Length: 131
Image (tube, rainbow, N blue to C red):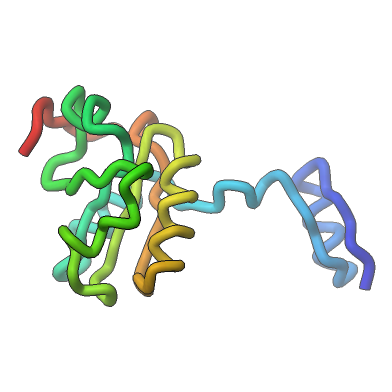
């Protein structure tokens, strides 16, 4: 099996069809649409919506009922979220920090984590200030 670097989506499909290992820029952030993610969060029992932006970004506007644990403090998540099996839906501004946060959360034992991307793509109402 060869390793191929795919530059376009069609080349990704071709590589997969041929059974090659694909390294693609399309899988860098691998998260669902933020709006779909929030909808899934709302329909998941006992789920936590986790905002990993800075406190200042959170206070400027966040998704209702989200919990703020900035990426730089993610190792303290168990102080606010004690159940490591609880469904977590993680977002940030663009999706990059939420990807780092999901990796860090997995490393400290959380098992049910979904990266829903960035709030910049969210179409719903934002709440200003802290909770």
